[in-house]
Length: 535
Image (cartoon, rainbow, N blue to C red):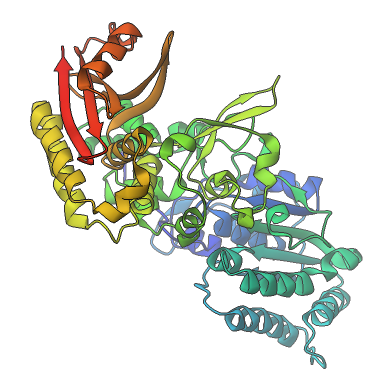
């Protein structure tokens, strides 16, 4: 029987992972490639995708800590395998490493950012015996780089982790964002001018640096965020999962009563689907995957660990949107460089934050299709979108919980009548002043679709057929429901459209019976006034 390993859930220190016997997926082949082929790099990845661990690993390499990369036995008797870079021709020279870590701060005021920058500079100034005679961080940074180089005889390594954390907390406050940009431009401005003193520069964040306008003076950064050669630098590839973690999948399957293949399929459905380049390499969410192996249960761990407030705040400042406007949406490559705070489209923020990913790439058109990467993100984000489109204060958790219970009963017993009655009860609880500006079919379509997605339903919207797009297709264990909505029209007219346009025909080979459902919403009743279902 396979032995359960120690999984580094939330642990971002490379030293701790290795010395305490935790599992480490060897990323040093790609790190070696970075260190030997370039100098100033930038990498954008979603939160909890291993950026801080990557920075910690690079720091250990430049600190010359080869013992952490060789084979050794921990104090608790766990044998840590030798990593790629320890077998390579890397020279293991010790360089001065200056590390700025902005990942942990839950910043509220610009003074907190000032304090963090000042304390970081002071820590390294003390290390190299520098007495700062000025407060200007630009001058202090330049002096620090030169002194560290001259004292050690080795050029300096600068690592900046989660550079955009403060700004993401401040989005919507233009004055605070401008002050933060000024701070960052000042402290990191010397990095290009002092290039002779630098061995390596690596900056990470959620947003691309071009979107934040911070590193305009450091325009020599090589952005590898969407470079195919580095698309597996963070996260766990499917190849890594099925080779290095096969025994972990087997153990999880045993705990859940599933075969290896079924357990792998569940992990893929829940955590896979990220693509960070045109190569479309499958990447799993590392935080959720490690959490699932650790707890022996598959759950929605990444989303539950804290939805970025910036996402909800940004959506609140944009025109009303529905899930159909952000899932399976086409965009050109330049959308990835749009400024976050332009509020023209949510796509840049949703992609960089990990809520959307590349689903397809058309080389001829240079066109990307973005969509939800997996069920964990889809369900969690739709719950957030539900809060956004209902303005939350007009509904309660109990309202949604009652509808969720009704959905679960519908899934178990296929009682469509009871479920639609539950939907009518939910809609009846929406106050008049909130719904007043949303009197159209599109609103009810978006609300019903978003609710079903937040329940984890296998539902799709606007599925194409030869003669048009069906409103909703709900796949349940025993039946497939093809649903058409009408506003101030009859349920029969909705059914007629399903029939005339052959919406149900494409599901004939599925094996499950198809149920055609017509729903009629009334502007006067502000609810479903009639519905009909035909098998």
